[in-house]
Image (cartoon, rainbow, N blue to C red; front, side):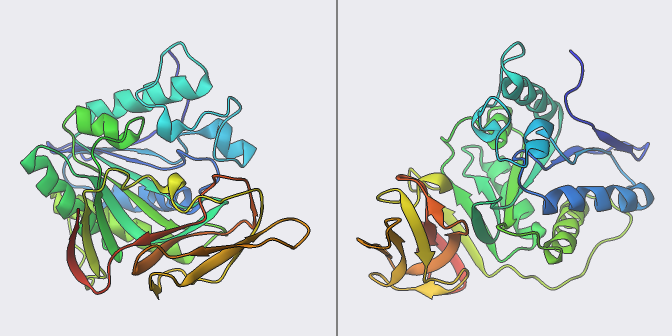
Length: 306
């Protein structure tokens, strides 16, 4: 079966881990794509151990449609491990899943795409294997974004669920969205380099101060499923009143959903104290679509959420 996405292969020529770094699982997430393109040029000079496969755009059909999904309207991040003879998204999911299984670790970079803005975080599944969980915690922390977030290990269809089943350590990142943010690119590049340093694959190590503020392990059943958070009660237009990255108190206004005649507004209020880490950036909304996300954390440090 011929390849669906282009791969950049970098081999140090020396024994070491075989890493996989990907972006473009969703076609409307651009900063990670640029980050990988920038990363590959520097890696050829500094990779001293092991090998890497870089895939800037996993979901090319969605990318050129400027859409989260491809022409079959399937979400690649819900379609793994895929089907070799299925629809286009099924085939892509099948191929990327095989690459994950063949690798020693995975970094999967995302943004909020067209619809959401997300406070920078590095996430991982709360893996049942203690050694893999420890490695994933270290990878997330090494990526050096403000939040590390361990979430429900039972979610299916993801690249991380493929890695989970193959017992391969894996993290994903979320950073920004809504509009193109060049500032994010250097932090994504640095984060990948930090993880390669953690695995001992580089000739030199970074020494930037830690930006990690919150180390969250979230054992709630729905944790990590962003698309179900604060669903809109109806079709309409959503006007946000909250600010990404700011604290919010229970009962405080997140925003309002109006009918298209400007009447009958529904107030969306915080259901708990916490940090606003997800906000919808597109005002038009259909009933059931996510509007916001709040992590129930109040101060920097380590937090376990049951």
